[in-house]
Image 1 (spheres, helix red, strand yellow):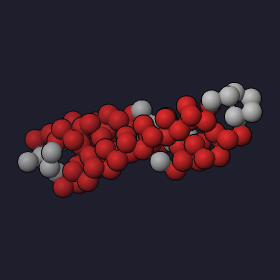
Image 2 (tube, rainbow, N blue to C red; image 1 turned 90 degrees about the vertical axis):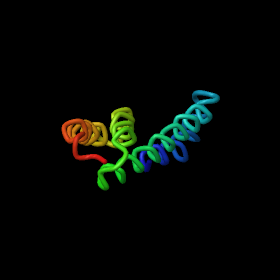
Image 3 (cartoon, rainbow, N blue to C red; image 1 turned 60 degrees about the vertical axis):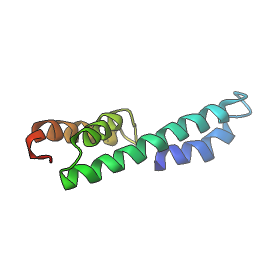
Image 4 (tube, rainbow, N blue to C red; image 1 turned 180 degrees about the horizontal axis):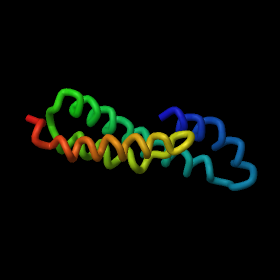
Length: 92
């Protein structure tokens, strides 16, 4: 969320002179990323409590689409997704 927040508020205004309307595109992408992050956090909480396997799985899948600063979010989401799939029987 921090990476997209910086992109929306800092980069969107600096590229507006070169590409008119780019700030709106950054704002829409930032909003989509914010929704993904909320679902990822909820999925992570459910994975820690070992409840709602489906929400934990969706949170891991949506985490693959986030970038972060150095792709660390996608890599950690992939690891979490594999662990969630393997431990499906432990969920209530």
